[in-house]
Length: 219
Image 1: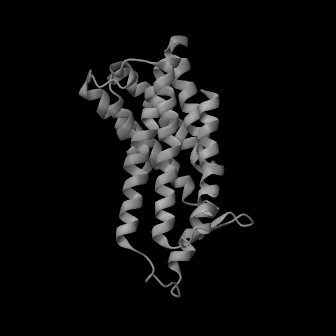
Image 2: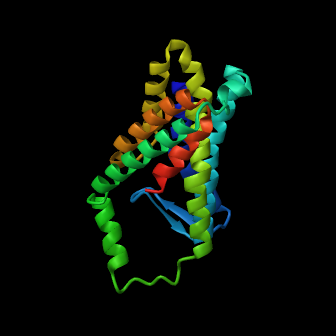
Image 3: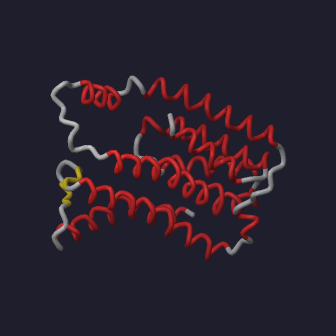
């Protein structure tokens, strides 16, 4: 599991940069600055790279785990709903965690920088594309949430249950938090992941974990 997650990090940190350099060499309007760590270029090209790498960094580890662990699909992706009340409880807890964590993030340096940027009267918004923004938000909130839960609460979770449910819940929450680059998001991500693991066990469906992940991203 550790080696597979290292592959995730390798795709996100190395493959993305090499792919951008390759696209730049063959004439696409995109480049990467190794000094500032910033991607430059056309909005469509940047969106394409972000979405492609976002898919690959989950799809490849999921495929490897799927082939290696060889579990039945109804075990790795349970869909049996035990109780509707468990869904309500899990989503309510997720909302509480997300609201509390969003308060602390609102006063972070990153949030103040974003606020100052959009609060400036000299900013030119003509370069923004509503279509590209919608595509990226849909991908980040819906697609990434689904792939993340299929990877951690699907493929990995039920393999780790042989060491106990508490072990599976804790370890998958820990590793799913590690793949987040922003330190300010880690506490809330860990709490949501812990709750998602417990909700998966209590509800008997991975869908509740997916909806919890989506809900937390909305905050």
